[in-house]
Amino acid sequence: MLAALIERWRPETHSFVLPIGEVTVTLEDVAHIFGLPINGEPVSGWTDSSSEFVQSQGIAIFGREPSVSQNAKSYIKLGWVRRIRDAEPLDTEESIRRYVRCHIFCLLGSTLFTDKSTAYAHAKYLLLLRDFEHIHTYSWGSACLAHLYIALCRASRYDTKEMDGPLNLLFVWAWERMPCLAPVPRQTLPPAEIPVGRRWSHSEWTTAWLSKTVETFRHDIDYMQEFEWRPYHRLIVPDELYPHLEVCDIVAPLLSFECVEWHLADRVMRQYGYAQAPPRAARDIPVDQHCIVLRGVQQHDWTVLHGPWIEEWANRRHSRLRDQHPLLTWDFFPTVEYRDCHRPTVMVAITLRAVTTLSTAPTLRAATILSTVTTIGLTSPAAEMLVWVAGQILVVSFHCRCQLIHVGHQ
Image 1: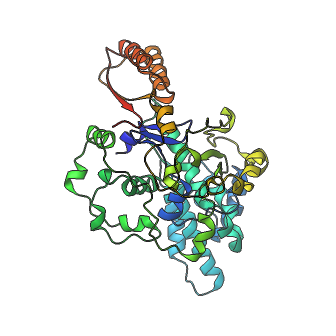
Image 2: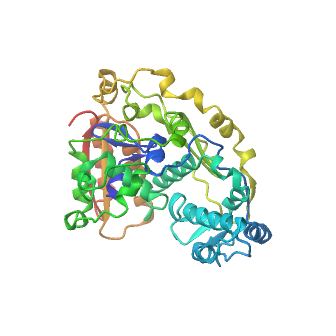
Image 3: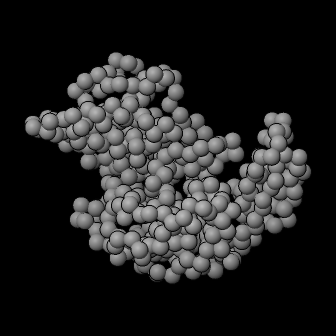
């Protein structure tokens, strides 16, 4: 299922292109699925790779020197943190606070900001946990979504074999929005309540679902008959979550230390109950600020380096959809303007399956061509020509599967 979804991801718009149009995981999904705060300060601050910084912050949070990765000293072992947490006597306020900090740190490393190892979490989050009374004021939800977007962007590259990030968020989003992809019928689950992800945590996956192949999921997505545009509208919302739902329909940057990603709510207006107008061009993030990976010596103050982005986040309320489109339509059928905008566009979903080894240069040329077809709008003749050229380059070593999906036409 994950591979079938990644094939339809467009990094420049942070959306999945389906036969029904563009859809994506939004801040509203994060708030309902995980129950995380949205309306708060950006998750940002100082990163320092020195042993002195990691040790001093570890002692302040855990009460002792942390156990770190042998290969990357900025990463703390989650197994060690869990043992420290479970050993807390909980007989004093300080012990209780240390337990809570350990639990939050494990949650950050194992669920919200997961890396490919799943066994470590970056020490950069420790500074945000020192002031106990301030932890809840950060926008953990927007930071989590930033990590999902960047993970999807990386996974969509032709040379990427694995994906990290908050996959639980992506899976639950897909199962709630697209019933044809769910491992069990939703009516067999407990009634939905916030956090919605909880009701999927103990579901038993059917044998038929586990036996599905990538081709089966591709077919299910291409020919699905149902998409849930407003799956949460009947849920009882806790009082403390209301202020965060007030800013879920924004067009604003999502921040998490080195990560900067755009939340383009105006491209998926139907998910908020509004008629979808032809979307505006997506705003770019400079190459030197997108998909940054923290390696080597790190001594960066991201509140300074990302100052302009943080200022835009501070003004997030000025970009809310509800202020520009005050009346909900609940009309999920594409408008004439939206259909006309996408009718000449052909999105080509291509899967390359290696069968023999080919030299690097031809592979790179073909991958560049195929990437061009999948990430920009092309009319049918142009798309078919580029696919044909790519197929000629890879005819010896790849089978190309091409599906022409007309947006808005099923």
